[in-house]
Length: 287
Image (tube, rainbow, N blue to C red; front, side, top):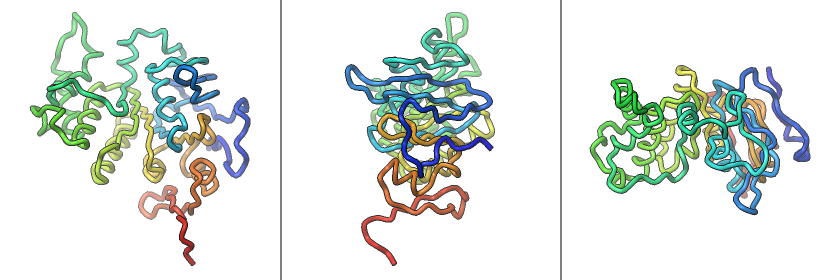
């Protein structure tokens, strides 16, 4: 088995110390990344490799750089230093349409054009596959309908997106990302606004896409137990650095949760999935 990136019973290493494993196949990776906005540096030094065929989940406290890293991997922001590579080539060197055919993105807090219908928004996921010589096709129609059925929004097709609840809108955005049918799918807090039942339905759908459709998923999640249950590869971040990486069963320990989140806890086996389950101790001592 591939060893975990770092035993978090140890101190966090200096940023220049390489603690990573090299997956057998890596289509998407970042090397020597410095990420930020203007003069504000969020991630001073990152090396990240996304194992092909994995369901990679990025976790960490607010402001640690999770979403910034995700945006850099899909070319939404340009690294201040270092490079992102897709299939061995710098991602900045690809035409935008080529990137969109390979990388799908569900952004955080996406905004739809005023008055656009659910069907029209989901259909926009097919734009990267169209050109002057290839207009709307039966394949596009199937992709859109399949995505809407999978996310439970088919009955909302004629509704205006801005009339929907927050949870309904979120599922519509997920449907658009799925309709893009890219081999790599990046998801920035995909369960935002969803009730617990829809959260689980969506995470089960993502796991199915990973296991049975062979798609590589990279998601930012806030719920550590969801991350443990559904991820095949976990990246834990703190203060702009990756401090632990590997299979959840290897890297999620009480020491890791304390170090990354500052949360005293117990870690035990989930009785359903047998993955790590984090139980916060809280402030009340229990005998």
